[in-house]
Image (cartoon, rainbow over all chains, first blue to last red; front, side, top):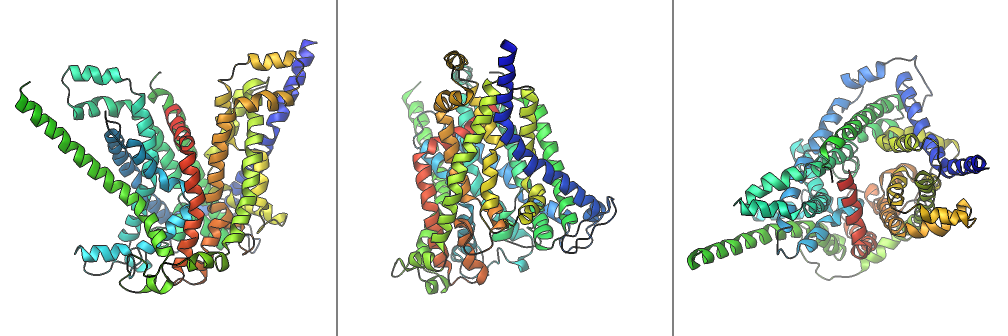
Length: 300
Length: 286
């Protein structure tokens, strides 16, 4: 009787998770296996052409033949734009420490304002950035010129502008848009640190700066680590800025490479190989996080 | 402590505070400035935006650009399409995920730990790696350039949401379900009658986050929706851009941007704690 009930519960339990796993199979497992196969047979969708199984696509992917902006370049671009991550962590930590001080007013207001870019649509924001950084009419050039910082208009986002300016704008935009999230995490972390630690340090006569370095920073390492991993995974998948803000050979990211070769040019083999490389990188980072997070997180 | 030292340390304290407020003030102004610029540009004429040097304030502010946002940018169609997506995204996805989470957290599901790990592994695979084969699936059943590829996946829930609900349900005592079982409540009734009401805060938070995420989504819609009639709000914002790459219509684009941002702004102001809490929880629990 009891085991019959149990069997029934099991059947129901399996039924309840079934949609999740059916979706997982259709939208994740099968597409991923197909992508791996495409990369091995160099599938060209337009001609319906496939080649014998080999790693040739991967080899030419890294040698960079066939394409104007190579995969290696796309990786470098992606990594350079990810420079916003350490900037965000440092600035975010500093701001968080400032607004969580005792008797500090306006901390919540500040936190709410700085998280705004994460909530309003990225397309609208990207478009206004494009307007602000326009070469001839953009407010940024006008202000810089009036302040005497620059003499000639800078072509921030154009193809002819070399690599520094478009990348700098993308990094700046990522700092601008990402710092609010870092602050929310750090503030929550700082408020979680027991006040007794700081009281003890006060009694020992440690300065505020000293307390920040010796208590706050180490206590926040799990959050720093978590955010680092999450933003690396997110940063590797950056795409929109390349397509909408600055589409130059210095800013084309890995996902843009996949999109361009796959969706625009029907080179499914090529695009799939790049996507498998990307997926492998993300998987490795996730596993590292999983393994390390046990060690890093302080026992509560 | 002598008075002189007290005063000196007091004035040092005030000085430090002033510096901190200046630094934070600059950061806040920098954050808000693009929004202000967006609003200002939306009240200008196309000519004003392209005249050099551009004036900061519109000479004769008017709502022409906002009217044009509906006429030329097709914003109305975009809002309609996005709202259709929202209906499915905020009902089916949370429900299916919660049902799965109920099974993971409260029922005799065999191999539950392993199954949950397998499900979570889907989050490790970037969308870009699945994009092309998924595109072919939708192509083969002729759903490209319809809302189908964006609606149908919500019938299968989301791994992230499921995980979130599992965590939340673990805090709900099992006794409640056992008592219901003794009363002869079926599993479906336990789910709707006990489970869902108990996880209401988590459910609300996920619905709010999903609503905002769906409204702002760009990448996936941009792949599937190409026709003027099927585009979402975010894609309609770009429809003038792609036709001609000049700034003449930028006032209309900015008006559309303002209109598309306002609903999110309100949701953010009123549901602020959901954003903060869900982010903070994910960070602290790792």
